[in-house]
Image (tube, rainbow, N blue to C red):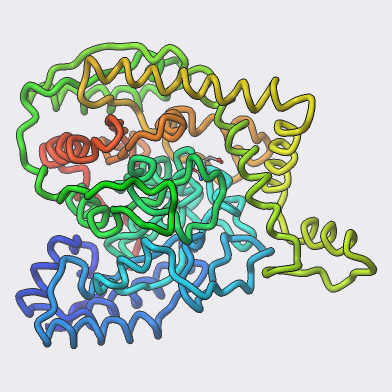
Length: 492
Ligand code: GLN
């Protein structure tokens, strides 16, 4: 069978798996169709920084050959996209920063290596806010990405390219990273599923560090099942990441389809506040009612330190970033200024020319928070409040199995709307940040659309290593609705 690129939208990873296994489809046909779709749509969306067409076709060919030799697996021959802060051997890994414009890592991130071993095909590297700092993809050092549902709006960020690529059906799945919401918020704004795993479940080896105590790699997909398939492939202990948990991850897909009757769902009152757009709040409440209709019990609760989460995050994340980004000095790798008279000038000019405005803002904020005389007042205080945020969740999970909230207080906003006011931009993550501070897993999945046709995301948060339960509830909701089947009307 030859598939037409118009068929790509109907394809989920689970369906591709069946079609490839049944011989109705080859990876080469599918990869060609995805690449054709990238070619047709990408000029309007701008989801990719690098399209790796030749690599992808070679990998697809190899996957088909391996299948012919008896190899199997849910991702064998499946085309995926990778956020461009995940290291890929010999291929550009820019973090959407001019300072890494020509960087080609000599190794794969562990998550990438695991997908490669599973036989996945890599279509390319997707756009992000520079070094994953942002909520709109407008901080990319190269170009912005448009939201496939409304090209005048942002896809969210920082993993906006991965979210947009999946939403525009250029590929059935992608990887992103989430430090304060960078998988879940763009998933919500683009109407796809995005999952941030428990801190330590997925190795961070080869993920270019932003804030090491918060960063996690996770999947984007069109369905909860597909997200579970991707998570299964990338999760698990890795000796190359000292913060990777020494556990054997369960087969996440197996929990799907179990009934949710009797499960307790918590609604934290701090997440249903006046700043939430009414259409978002009512869609999220309707989603919780749909779960209640399946027998789940809904319990109102409080996470009293929620108000401090954004401030704590912007101290911890910037402090860690200021330290992590010290390595970009022009001496070891990446951009080096051509005009240098001495080493101090080389460092200064390299960083001045190489980093964008938001990255510089974060480095300055973080350096300030860590500096002598301010450390106790800012960074240390933030760490203490971070513990209080975590305890809020520990207490809440004594009463409930999962917590349900809006993923983002608003649907996708207009490009340029928040660029002049960093604080407004930071507030777009108020509901996602706490899960990172507490190290907890979170998922965003579509739960409706605004009257203007913009997707709305439901966030579920679970206890640490509670991904199975979280996926079970997400799947039960998803399958009771038709939202996930909607696709943006991008003309082919
Ligand atoms: N938008 C948040 C920030 O700007 C979160 C980014 C992320 O999760 N990488 O820091």
